[in-house]
Image (cartoon, rainbow, N blue to C red):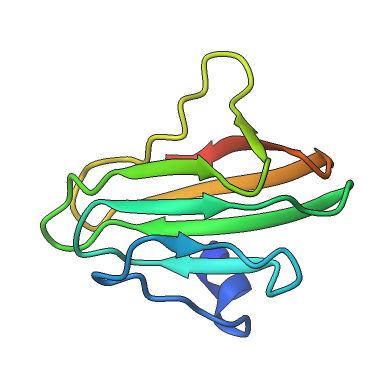
Length: 114
């Protein structure tokens, strides 16, 4: 896991805390690090076809924080196969998501690690 953290340390970080919704900026950083202290909504707007973004989600010491993924501005959010977009719920545990826009109006979210 430390290698994963090393990859994001130099990138801009977003600490969600109690801020909800968290709105993704398709023109912003390609990696986000979120540590919410409550359940959060992540707004996913339209992006450019071929765009990708990685989100590292760290449960706080309480755990059980959930994510609601909301497509905004005409963007549809999809999960391939049996994926749900739910983070690991154990306290202090990481989940790692990759968001890919195959079309401007479609964002596919995969959970790489949970």
